[in-house]
Length: 551
Ligand code: SF4
Ligand code: SF4
Image (tube, rainbow, N blue to C red; front, top):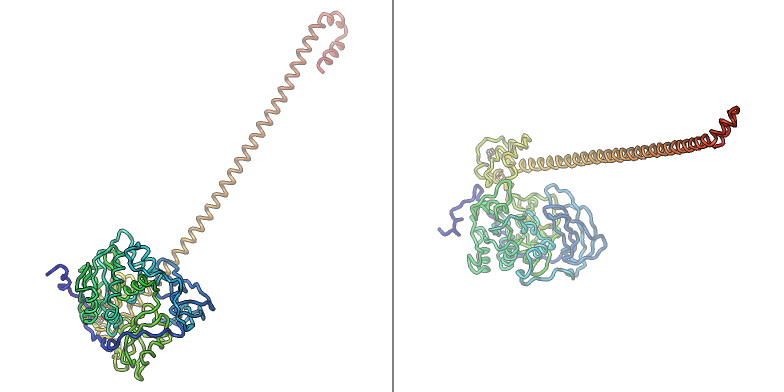
Protein backbone atom coordinates (compact mmCIF):
# COMPACT_ATOMS: atom_id res chain seq x y z
CA UNK A 1 0.00 0.00 0.00
CA UNK A 2 1.30 3.48 -0.90
CA UNK A 3 2.43 5.59 2.06
CA UNK A 4 -0.25 8.19 1.22
CA UNK A 5 -2.91 5.52 1.63
CA UNK A 6 -1.60 4.37 5.00
CA UNK A 7 -4.70 5.84 6.70
CA UNK A 8 -6.66 3.01 5.11
CA UNK A 9 -5.09 0.64 7.59
CA UNK A 10 -6.19 2.80 10.53
CA UNK A 11 -9.38 2.70 12.50
CA UNK A 12 -11.11 5.33 14.57
CA UNK A 13 -10.83 4.47 18.25
CA UNK A 14 -14.20 3.92 19.91
CA UNK A 15 -17.08 6.02 18.63
CA UNK A 16 -20.58 5.21 17.40
CA UNK A 17 -22.30 4.64 14.10
CA UNK A 18 -25.26 6.96 14.41
CA UNK A 19 -28.18 7.67 12.12
CA UNK A 20 -27.08 10.78 10.21
CA UNK A 21 -30.42 12.63 9.66
CA UNK A 22 -28.58 14.90 7.23
CA UNK A 23 -30.76 14.70 4.16
CA UNK A 24 -33.44 16.82 5.85
CA UNK A 25 -31.35 19.97 5.41
CA UNK A 26 -29.38 19.24 2.23
CA UNK A 27 -32.26 19.17 -0.24
CA UNK A 28 -32.25 22.93 -0.71
CA UNK A 29 -29.33 25.22 -1.60
CA UNK A 30 -27.96 27.61 1.02
CA UNK A 31 -30.36 30.52 1.39
CA UNK A 32 -28.72 33.89 1.95
CA UNK A 33 -30.96 35.82 4.34
CA UNK A 34 -31.48 39.55 3.88
CA UNK A 35 -29.98 41.80 6.56
CA UNK A 36 -32.20 41.89 9.65
CA UNK A 37 -33.69 45.07 11.12
CA UNK A 38 -31.64 44.69 14.28
CA UNK A 39 -28.60 42.70 15.39
CA UNK A 40 -27.36 41.91 18.89
CA UNK A 41 -23.62 41.31 18.90
CA UNK A 42 -22.07 39.81 22.05
CA UNK A 43 -18.55 41.16 22.63
CA UNK A 44 -17.42 37.65 23.53
CA UNK A 45 -17.92 35.32 20.59
CA UNK A 46 -14.49 33.71 20.82
CA UNK A 47 -12.27 31.82 23.23
CA UNK A 48 -10.22 34.27 25.32
CA UNK A 49 -10.89 37.71 26.74
CA UNK A 50 -14.04 39.59 25.64
CA UNK A 51 -13.51 42.38 23.12
CA UNK A 52 -13.58 45.98 24.33
CA UNK A 53 -16.49 48.10 23.07
CA UNK A 54 -15.39 51.19 21.09
CA UNK A 55 -18.79 52.62 20.14
CA UNK A 56 -21.59 54.26 22.12
CA UNK A 57 -25.35 54.58 21.71
CA UNK A 58 -26.21 57.02 18.94
CA UNK A 59 -23.08 56.33 16.86
CA UNK A 60 -23.58 55.45 13.22
CA UNK A 61 -21.71 52.36 12.04
CA UNK A 62 -21.11 50.74 8.67
CA UNK A 63 -21.23 47.06 7.84
CA UNK A 64 -17.81 45.56 8.56
CA UNK A 65 -16.78 48.37 10.92
CA UNK A 66 -15.16 47.23 14.19
CA UNK A 67 -17.44 47.95 17.16
CA UNK A 68 -15.25 46.22 19.75
CA UNK A 69 -11.49 45.71 19.65
CA UNK A 70 -9.47 42.71 20.80
CA UNK A 71 -8.40 43.23 24.40
CA UNK A 72 -5.62 40.63 24.46
CA UNK A 73 -3.52 38.43 22.19
CA UNK A 74 -6.07 35.60 22.59
CA UNK A 75 -8.91 37.69 21.22
CA UNK A 76 -10.40 39.23 18.09
CA UNK A 77 -12.48 42.32 17.30
CA UNK A 78 -16.23 42.22 16.73
CA UNK A 79 -17.65 43.93 13.62
CA UNK A 80 -21.00 45.47 12.81
CA UNK A 81 -22.87 43.00 10.61
CA UNK A 82 -25.25 45.66 9.27
CA UNK A 83 -25.04 49.43 8.80
CA UNK A 84 -27.10 51.49 11.19
CA UNK A 85 -27.17 53.16 14.58
CA UNK A 86 -25.93 51.82 17.90
CA UNK A 87 -29.13 51.47 19.91
CA UNK A 88 -27.60 50.13 23.14
CA UNK A 89 -24.55 48.63 24.77
CA UNK A 90 -25.90 46.45 27.53
CA UNK A 91 -26.24 42.96 28.98
CA UNK A 92 -28.55 40.77 26.89
CA UNK A 93 -29.36 37.02 26.78
CA UNK A 94 -26.71 35.13 24.81
CA UNK A 95 -26.59 31.53 23.56
CA UNK A 96 -25.08 29.67 26.51
CA UNK A 97 -26.21 26.58 28.47
CA UNK A 98 -26.45 28.73 31.61
CA UNK A 99 -29.02 31.07 30.04
CA UNK A 100 -27.10 33.99 31.50
CA UNK A 101 -26.73 37.43 29.95
CA UNK A 102 -23.54 39.04 28.65
CA UNK A 103 -22.46 42.42 27.28
CA UNK A 104 -23.78 43.04 23.75
CA UNK A 105 -23.89 45.87 21.23
CA UNK A 106 -27.32 46.39 19.68
CA UNK A 107 -27.49 47.93 16.17
CA UNK A 108 -30.68 49.19 14.53
CA UNK A 109 -30.43 48.87 10.73
CA UNK A 110 -30.55 51.99 8.55
CA UNK A 111 -31.75 49.91 5.58
CA UNK A 112 -28.75 50.87 3.43
CA UNK A 113 -26.50 47.92 4.36
CA UNK A 114 -23.40 49.93 3.39
CA UNK A 115 -19.89 48.53 3.74
CA UNK A 116 -17.40 50.56 5.77
CA UNK A 117 -15.33 52.77 3.42
CA UNK A 118 -12.05 51.86 5.15
CA UNK A 119 -12.12 48.07 4.85
CA UNK A 120 -8.72 46.44 4.23
CA UNK A 121 -7.68 46.32 0.56
CA UNK A 122 -8.37 43.07 -1.31
CA UNK A 123 -5.24 40.96 -1.86
CA UNK A 124 -5.14 39.24 -5.22
CA UNK A 125 -1.86 37.39 -4.65
CA UNK A 126 -1.10 36.57 -1.01
CA UNK A 127 2.42 35.40 -1.85
CA UNK A 128 3.41 39.06 -2.34
CA UNK A 129 2.85 39.64 1.37
CA UNK A 130 4.61 38.56 4.55
CA UNK A 131 2.82 35.81 6.55
CA UNK A 132 2.82 38.12 9.60
CA UNK A 133 0.87 40.75 7.64
CA UNK A 134 -1.66 38.14 6.50
CA UNK A 135 -2.06 36.83 10.07
CA UNK A 136 -2.73 40.37 11.18
CA UNK A 137 -5.39 40.66 8.48
CA UNK A 138 -7.01 37.43 9.72
CA UNK A 139 -6.99 38.79 13.26
CA UNK A 140 -8.31 42.21 12.31
CA UNK A 141 -11.13 40.56 10.38
CA UNK A 142 -12.25 38.79 13.58
CA UNK A 143 -11.79 35.23 12.33
CA UNK A 144 -12.13 32.37 14.78
CA UNK A 145 -12.44 28.60 14.45
CA UNK A 146 -15.90 28.05 12.95
CA UNK A 147 -16.15 24.39 13.95
CA UNK A 148 -17.41 25.31 17.41
CA UNK A 149 -14.31 26.10 19.48
CA UNK A 150 -14.12 29.74 18.28
CA UNK A 151 -10.40 29.96 19.04
CA UNK A 152 -8.76 32.99 17.33
CA UNK A 153 -7.42 31.70 14.01
CA UNK A 154 -4.48 34.14 13.79
CA UNK A 155 -3.12 32.79 17.10
CA UNK A 156 -3.43 29.23 15.84
CA UNK A 157 -1.68 30.18 12.59
CA UNK A 158 1.26 31.54 14.58
CA UNK A 159 2.69 28.56 16.51
CA UNK A 160 5.46 29.61 18.88
CA UNK A 161 9.01 28.66 17.86
CA UNK A 162 10.52 26.12 17.70
CA UNK A 163 7.27 24.47 16.59
CA UNK A 164 7.02 23.95 12.87
CA UNK A 165 3.86 22.70 11.25
CA UNK A 166 4.53 19.72 8.97
CA UNK A 167 0.91 18.82 8.26
CA UNK A 168 -2.09 21.10 7.87
CA UNK A 169 -5.43 19.31 8.09
CA UNK A 170 -8.63 20.79 6.76
CA UNK A 171 -11.53 19.32 8.70
CA UNK A 172 -14.53 18.59 6.50
CA UNK A 173 -15.72 15.73 8.70
CA UNK A 174 -19.05 16.89 9.94
CA UNK A 175 -19.62 13.80 12.02
CA UNK A 176 -22.44 14.90 14.32
CA UNK A 177 -25.94 13.92 13.14
CA UNK A 178 -28.19 16.60 11.60
CA UNK A 179 -25.43 19.20 11.00
CA UNK A 180 -24.74 19.91 7.30
CA UNK A 181 -23.40 23.47 7.10
CA UNK A 182 -19.85 22.34 6.21
CA UNK A 183 -21.20 19.83 3.72
CA UNK A 184 -23.21 22.55 1.95
CA UNK A 185 -20.31 25.02 2.08
CA UNK A 186 -18.03 22.47 0.38
CA UNK A 187 -20.67 21.67 -2.22
CA UNK A 188 -21.28 25.32 -3.10
CA UNK A 189 -18.00 27.16 -2.40
CA UNK A 190 -15.25 24.57 -2.83
CA UNK A 191 -12.90 26.85 -4.81
CA UNK A 192 -12.97 29.53 -2.13
CA UNK A 193 -12.33 27.00 0.65
CA UNK A 194 -9.36 25.71 -1.31
CA UNK A 195 -8.02 29.25 -1.79
CA UNK A 196 -8.39 29.87 1.96
CA UNK A 197 -6.49 26.65 2.63
CA UNK A 198 -3.66 27.77 0.34
CA UNK A 199 -3.43 31.13 2.14
CA UNK A 200 -3.29 29.39 5.54
CA UNK A 201 -0.72 26.96 4.17
CA UNK A 202 1.45 29.85 2.95
CA UNK A 203 1.37 31.38 6.45
CA UNK A 204 2.68 28.08 7.86
CA UNK A 205 5.56 27.77 5.36
CA UNK A 206 3.89 25.28 3.05
CA UNK A 207 3.28 22.10 5.02
CA UNK A 208 1.63 19.03 3.50
CA UNK A 209 -2.17 19.50 3.42
CA UNK A 210 -4.83 16.86 3.97
CA UNK A 211 -8.52 17.56 3.49
CA UNK A 212 -10.53 15.02 5.49
CA UNK A 213 -14.16 14.59 4.39
CA UNK A 214 -16.64 12.08 5.79
CA UNK A 215 -17.29 9.31 3.31
CA UNK A 216 -21.06 9.82 3.34
CA UNK A 217 -20.69 13.30 1.79
CA UNK A 218 -20.23 12.32 -1.86
CA UNK A 219 -21.30 15.71 -3.22
CA UNK A 220 -18.83 17.57 -1.03
CA UNK A 221 -16.04 15.15 -1.95
CA UNK A 222 -16.86 15.59 -5.63
CA UNK A 223 -16.91 19.40 -5.42
CA UNK A 224 -13.65 19.58 -3.52
CA UNK A 225 -11.99 17.07 -5.85
CA UNK A 226 -13.07 19.13 -8.84
CA UNK A 227 -11.74 22.33 -7.26
CA UNK A 228 -8.41 20.65 -6.50
CA UNK A 229 -8.17 19.14 -9.95
CA UNK A 230 -8.00 15.58 -8.63
CA UNK A 231 -7.77 13.68 -5.37
CA UNK A 232 -4.21 14.84 -4.93
CA UNK A 233 -2.54 17.91 -6.35
CA UNK A 234 0.17 20.38 -5.45
CA UNK A 235 0.90 18.91 -2.00
CA UNK A 236 -2.81 18.80 -1.09
CA UNK A 237 -4.86 15.63 -0.99
CA UNK A 238 -8.40 14.65 -0.15
CA UNK A 239 -9.01 11.70 2.15
CA UNK A 240 -12.34 9.99 2.91
CA UNK A 241 -12.96 9.50 6.60
CA UNK A 242 -15.29 6.72 7.82
CA UNK A 243 -18.67 7.80 9.03
CA UNK A 244 -18.16 7.23 12.72
CA UNK A 245 -19.06 9.70 15.40
CA UNK A 246 -16.84 11.58 16.52
CA UNK A 247 -14.29 11.06 13.73
CA UNK A 248 -14.30 14.86 13.22
CA UNK A 249 -12.92 15.49 16.70
CA UNK A 250 -9.55 17.21 16.23
CA UNK A 251 -7.49 14.55 17.99
CA UNK A 252 -9.43 11.66 16.50
CA UNK A 253 -9.06 13.05 12.97
CA UNK A 254 -5.33 13.70 13.39
CA UNK A 255 -4.81 10.16 14.61
CA UNK A 256 -6.79 8.70 11.74
CA UNK A 257 -5.16 10.78 9.00
CA UNK A 258 -1.56 10.82 10.22
CA UNK A 259 -1.28 7.93 12.69
CA UNK A 260 0.12 10.37 15.25
CA UNK A 261 -1.35 10.85 18.71
CA UNK A 262 -1.65 14.27 20.31
CA UNK A 263 -0.52 13.97 23.96
CA UNK A 264 -3.34 14.30 26.52
CA UNK A 265 -1.77 17.44 27.96
CA UNK A 266 -0.51 18.86 24.66
CA UNK A 267 -1.69 20.55 21.48
CA UNK A 268 -1.57 19.28 17.88
CA UNK A 269 1.07 21.92 17.11
CA UNK A 270 3.34 20.20 19.68
CA UNK A 271 3.63 17.34 17.20
CA UNK A 272 3.80 19.57 14.11
CA UNK A 273 0.15 19.26 13.07
CA UNK A 274 -2.58 21.87 12.75
CA UNK A 275 -6.26 21.45 12.06
CA UNK A 276 -8.73 24.03 10.71
CA UNK A 277 -12.38 23.76 9.84
CA UNK A 278 -13.48 24.22 6.20
CA UNK A 279 -15.62 27.22 7.19
CA UNK A 280 -12.58 28.84 8.80
CA UNK A 281 -10.64 28.44 5.54
CA UNK A 282 -13.55 30.10 3.73
CA UNK A 283 -13.50 33.01 6.21
CA UNK A 284 -9.72 33.39 5.70
CA UNK A 285 -10.33 33.58 1.94
CA UNK A 286 -12.99 36.30 2.40
CA UNK A 287 -10.69 38.31 4.69
CA UNK A 288 -7.60 38.15 2.49
CA UNK A 289 -9.02 38.20 -1.04
CA UNK A 290 -11.87 40.63 -0.34
CA UNK A 291 -10.89 42.39 2.89
CA UNK A 292 -14.20 41.32 4.45
CA UNK A 293 -14.49 40.82 8.22
CA UNK A 294 -16.41 37.84 9.57
CA UNK A 295 -19.97 39.17 9.71
CA UNK A 296 -22.03 36.18 8.57
CA UNK A 297 -21.97 32.40 8.56
CA UNK A 298 -23.84 29.39 7.26
CA UNK A 299 -25.97 27.64 9.86
CA UNK A 300 -28.03 24.47 9.58
CA UNK A 301 -31.66 24.85 10.65
CA UNK A 302 -33.11 21.38 10.94
CA UNK A 303 -35.18 18.82 12.81
CA UNK A 304 -38.76 17.62 12.38
CA UNK A 305 -39.92 20.56 14.47
CA UNK A 306 -39.04 22.96 11.60
CA UNK A 307 -41.23 23.45 8.51
CA UNK A 308 -38.43 23.87 5.93
CA UNK A 309 -35.13 22.47 7.19
CA UNK A 310 -32.21 23.98 5.26
CA UNK A 311 -28.93 25.84 5.54
CA UNK A 312 -29.02 29.61 5.63
CA UNK A 313 -26.32 32.25 5.53
CA UNK A 314 -27.25 34.81 8.18
CA UNK A 315 -25.61 37.91 9.63
CA UNK A 316 -24.00 37.56 13.05
CA UNK A 317 -26.31 38.90 15.71
CA UNK A 318 -29.54 37.94 13.88
CA UNK A 319 -32.12 36.66 16.37
CA UNK A 320 -32.49 32.88 16.24
CA UNK A 321 -36.30 33.17 16.03
CA UNK A 322 -35.93 35.28 12.85
CA UNK A 323 -33.73 32.58 11.32
CA UNK A 324 -36.30 29.92 12.25
CA UNK A 325 -39.02 32.07 10.70
CA UNK A 326 -36.98 32.29 7.48
CA UNK A 327 -37.11 28.48 7.41
CA UNK A 328 -40.90 28.37 7.65
CA UNK A 329 -41.10 28.53 11.44
CA UNK A 330 -41.79 25.81 13.99
CA UNK A 331 -44.23 22.96 13.49
CA UNK A 332 -46.92 22.48 16.11
CA UNK A 333 -45.22 19.44 17.58
CA UNK A 334 -41.82 21.06 18.07
CA UNK A 335 -40.11 19.90 21.23
CA UNK A 336 -37.69 22.75 21.93
CA UNK A 337 -34.54 24.08 20.38
CA UNK A 338 -30.94 22.93 20.56
CA UNK A 339 -27.92 24.99 19.51
CA UNK A 340 -25.44 22.55 17.97
CA UNK A 341 -26.09 18.88 17.30
CA UNK A 342 -27.93 16.28 19.37
CA UNK A 343 -24.70 14.92 20.90
CA UNK A 344 -22.71 18.02 21.81
CA UNK A 345 -25.26 20.83 21.55
CA UNK A 346 -27.17 22.44 24.40
CA UNK A 347 -30.83 23.34 24.86
CA UNK A 348 -31.58 27.03 24.41
CA UNK A 349 -33.61 28.72 27.12
CA UNK A 350 -35.06 31.11 24.55
CA UNK A 351 -34.95 31.60 20.78
CA UNK A 352 -34.50 35.34 21.31
CA UNK A 353 -30.73 34.92 21.49
CA UNK A 354 -28.46 35.97 18.61
CA UNK A 355 -26.52 33.91 16.08
CA UNK A 356 -22.80 33.97 16.97
CA UNK A 357 -19.60 32.93 15.19
CA UNK A 358 -19.60 29.42 16.67
CA UNK A 359 -23.25 28.59 15.87
CA UNK A 360 -23.26 25.76 13.34
CA UNK A 361 -26.74 24.33 13.88
CA UNK A 362 -30.21 25.10 15.23
CA UNK A 363 -32.01 21.84 15.83
CA UNK A 364 -35.68 21.65 16.68
CA UNK A 365 -36.84 18.02 16.99
CA UNK A 366 -40.49 17.07 17.25
CA UNK A 367 -41.92 15.21 20.22
CA UNK A 368 -41.17 11.76 18.80
CA UNK A 369 -37.76 12.41 17.29
CA UNK A 370 -35.69 11.97 20.45
CA UNK A 371 -36.43 9.34 23.04
CA UNK A 372 -37.05 10.68 26.52
CA UNK A 373 -34.08 9.89 28.77
CA UNK A 374 -34.95 6.93 31.01
CA UNK A 375 -34.63 6.90 34.75
CA UNK A 376 -31.07 6.97 36.04
CA UNK A 377 -29.99 3.70 37.68
CA UNK A 378 -26.82 2.64 39.51
CA UNK A 379 -23.77 1.75 37.43
CA UNK A 380 -23.64 -1.97 36.70
CA UNK A 381 -19.97 -1.88 35.62
CA UNK A 382 -20.72 -3.21 32.18
CA UNK A 383 -17.78 -1.33 30.65
CA UNK A 384 -19.75 -0.24 27.56
CA UNK A 385 -18.80 3.39 28.16
CA UNK A 386 -15.08 2.58 27.99
CA UNK A 387 -15.52 0.59 24.78
CA UNK A 388 -16.99 3.55 22.88
CA UNK A 389 -14.81 6.31 24.33
CA UNK A 390 -12.82 7.82 21.42
CA UNK A 391 -10.29 9.28 23.86
CA UNK A 392 -9.57 5.86 25.40
CA UNK A 393 -10.71 7.02 28.82
CA UNK A 394 -12.43 5.11 31.60
CA UNK A 395 -15.75 6.99 31.91
CA UNK A 396 -16.97 4.72 34.70
CA UNK A 397 -14.03 5.67 36.95
CA UNK A 398 -14.31 9.31 35.94
CA UNK A 399 -17.97 9.19 36.93
CA UNK A 400 -17.22 7.75 40.38
CA UNK A 401 -14.59 10.36 41.11
CA UNK A 402 -16.67 13.22 39.71
CA UNK A 403 -19.68 12.11 41.73
CA UNK A 404 -17.61 11.83 44.93
CA UNK A 405 -15.91 15.16 44.11
CA UNK A 406 -12.53 13.40 44.15
CA UNK A 407 -11.33 15.94 41.66
CA UNK A 408 -7.63 15.10 41.89
CA UNK A 409 -8.35 11.47 41.09
CA UNK A 410 -10.62 12.53 38.22
CA UNK A 411 -7.70 14.52 36.84
CA UNK A 412 -5.43 11.52 37.28
CA UNK A 413 -7.86 9.66 35.02
CA UNK A 414 -7.35 12.40 32.36
CA UNK A 415 -10.68 14.12 32.83
CA UNK A 416 -9.53 17.00 30.62
CA UNK A 417 -8.89 14.66 27.69
CA UNK A 418 -12.65 14.08 27.58
CA UNK A 419 -14.04 15.86 24.51
CA UNK A 420 -17.61 15.64 25.86
CA UNK A 421 -18.71 13.73 22.79
CA UNK A 422 -21.47 11.98 24.74
CA UNK A 423 -20.76 8.48 23.36
CA UNK A 424 -20.46 7.02 26.87
CA UNK A 425 -23.76 8.48 28.06
CA UNK A 426 -25.43 7.37 24.81
CA UNK A 427 -24.63 3.69 25.41
CA UNK A 428 -24.96 3.62 29.19
CA UNK A 429 -27.71 1.10 30.06
CA UNK A 430 -28.17 2.82 33.42
CA UNK A 431 -28.98 6.14 31.74
CA UNK A 432 -26.34 7.92 33.78
CA UNK A 433 -25.82 11.45 32.42
CA UNK A 434 -22.07 10.91 32.40
CA UNK A 435 -21.16 14.01 30.39
CA UNK A 436 -22.98 16.25 32.84
CA UNK A 437 -20.85 14.81 35.64
CA UNK A 438 -17.69 15.41 33.61
CA UNK A 439 -18.68 18.98 32.80
CA UNK A 440 -19.47 19.59 36.45
CA UNK A 441 -16.10 18.15 37.57
CA UNK A 442 -14.25 20.26 34.98
CA UNK A 443 -16.02 23.45 36.05
CA UNK A 444 -15.28 22.63 39.72
CA UNK A 445 -11.60 22.18 38.90
CA UNK A 446 -11.54 25.39 36.87
CA UNK A 447 -13.17 27.38 39.66
CA UNK A 448 -10.79 25.76 42.18
CA UNK A 449 -7.90 26.76 39.93
CA UNK A 450 -9.27 30.27 39.64
CA UNK A 451 -9.61 30.49 43.42
CA UNK A 452 -6.07 29.18 43.77
CA UNK A 453 -4.85 31.73 41.26
CA UNK A 454 -6.76 34.51 43.02
CA UNK A 455 -5.27 33.36 46.36
CA UNK A 456 -1.81 33.28 44.76
CA UNK A 457 -2.30 36.77 43.41
CA UNK A 458 -3.47 37.98 46.86
CA UNK A 459 -0.53 36.21 48.54
CA UNK A 460 1.95 37.69 46.06
CA UNK A 461 0.40 41.11 46.56
CA UNK A 462 0.69 40.71 50.35
CA UNK A 463 4.29 39.51 50.08
CA UNK A 464 5.14 42.35 47.76
CA UNK A 465 3.59 44.88 50.13
CA UNK A 466 5.48 43.40 53.11
CA UNK A 467 8.68 43.48 51.06
CA UNK A 468 8.02 47.06 50.03
CA UNK A 469 7.40 48.11 53.66
CA UNK A 470 10.52 46.25 54.79
CA UNK A 471 12.55 47.96 52.08
CA UNK A 472 11.14 51.36 53.03
CA UNK A 473 12.06 50.63 56.64
CA UNK A 474 15.56 49.63 55.65
CA UNK A 475 16.02 52.74 53.50
CA UNK A 476 14.75 54.93 56.35
CA UNK A 477 17.11 53.27 58.85
CA UNK A 478 20.00 53.65 56.42
CA UNK A 479 19.18 57.31 55.87
CA UNK A 480 18.99 57.87 59.66
CA UNK A 481 22.30 56.11 60.20
CA UNK A 482 23.94 58.26 57.52
CA UNK A 483 22.53 61.37 59.10
CA UNK A 484 23.84 60.37 62.52
CA UNK A 485 27.23 59.63 61.04
CA UNK A 486 27.29 63.00 59.33
CA UNK A 487 26.37 64.69 62.60
CA UNK A 488 29.03 62.73 64.46
CA UNK A 489 31.59 63.74 61.85
CA UNK A 490 30.45 67.29 62.06
CA UNK A 491 30.75 67.41 65.90
CA UNK A 492 34.07 65.56 65.74
CA UNK A 493 35.26 68.27 63.36
CA UNK A 494 34.01 70.99 65.71
CA UNK A 495 35.89 69.46 68.65
CA UNK A 496 39.06 69.35 66.62
CA UNK A 497 38.55 72.97 65.60
CA UNK A 498 37.82 73.93 69.19
CA UNK A 499 40.97 72.17 70.37
CA UNK A 500 42.97 73.80 67.62
CA UNK A 501 41.62 77.22 68.65
CA UNK A 502 42.47 76.53 72.29
CA UNK A 503 45.92 75.27 71.40
CA UNK A 504 46.47 78.27 69.19
CA UNK A 505 45.37 80.53 72.05
CA UNK A 506 47.59 78.67 74.51
CA UNK A 507 50.43 78.91 72.09
CA UNK A 508 49.83 82.60 71.65
CA UNK A 509 49.81 83.07 75.44
CA UNK A 510 52.94 81.00 75.73
CA UNK A 511 54.57 83.01 72.99
CA UNK A 512 53.68 86.28 74.69
CA UNK A 513 54.96 84.97 78.00
CA UNK A 514 58.16 83.83 76.48
CA UNK A 515 58.51 87.23 74.74
CA UNK A 516 57.91 88.97 78.07
CA UNK A 517 60.38 86.68 79.69
CA UNK A 518 63.06 87.58 77.19
CA UNK A 519 62.22 91.30 77.77
CA UNK A 520 62.65 90.82 81.48
CA UNK A 521 65.95 89.09 80.86
CA UNK A 522 67.15 92.06 78.79
CA UNK A 523 65.99 94.53 81.41
CA UNK A 524 67.59 92.38 84.05
CA UNK A 525 70.85 92.30 82.24
CA UNK A 526 70.68 96.05 81.44
CA UNK A 527 69.88 97.02 84.93
CA UNK A 528 71.74 94.34 86.73
CA UNK A 529 74.62 96.61 87.50
CA UNK A 530 72.34 99.57 88.29
CA UNK A 531 70.10 97.33 90.35
CA UNK A 532 72.86 96.16 92.33
CA UNK A 533 74.05 99.74 92.69
CA UNK A 534 70.82 101.93 92.61
CA UNK A 535 68.18 99.61 93.88
CA UNK A 536 70.06 97.50 96.10
CA UNK A 537 68.04 99.01 98.90
CA UNK A 538 64.80 99.33 96.82
CA UNK A 539 63.50 95.85 95.56
CA UNK A 540 60.02 97.30 94.98
CA UNK A 541 61.30 99.61 92.26
CA UNK A 542 62.88 96.66 90.54
CA UNK A 543 59.54 94.73 90.56
CA UNK A 544 57.72 97.78 89.14
CA UNK A 545 60.24 98.03 86.37
CA UNK A 546 59.71 94.36 85.49
CA UNK A 547 55.93 94.84 85.60
CA UNK A 548 56.08 97.73 83.09
CA UNK A 549 58.18 95.68 80.76
CA UNK A 550 55.70 92.85 80.91
CA UNK A 551 52.73 94.94 79.75
S1 SF4 B 1 -21.90 2.23 30.70
FE1 SF4 B 1 -22.94 3.04 32.49
S2 SF4 B 1 -23.44 1.25 33.67
FE2 SF4 B 1 -21.92 0.60 32.18
S3 SF4 B 1 -19.96 0.87 33.28
FE3 SF4 B 1 -20.33 2.74 32.16
S4 SF4 B 1 -21.34 4.03 33.66
FE4 SF4 B 1 -21.51 1.98 34.43
S1 SF4 C 1 -17.83 12.07 26.74
FE1 SF4 C 1 -15.71 11.94 27.35
S2 SF4 C 1 -15.56 10.08 28.54
FE2 SF4 C 1 -17.50 10.00 27.41
S3 SF4 C 1 -16.97 8.90 25.57
FE3 SF4 C 1 -16.74 11.05 25.08
S4 SF4 C 1 -14.59 11.49 25.48
FE4 SF4 C 1 -15.05 9.54 26.46
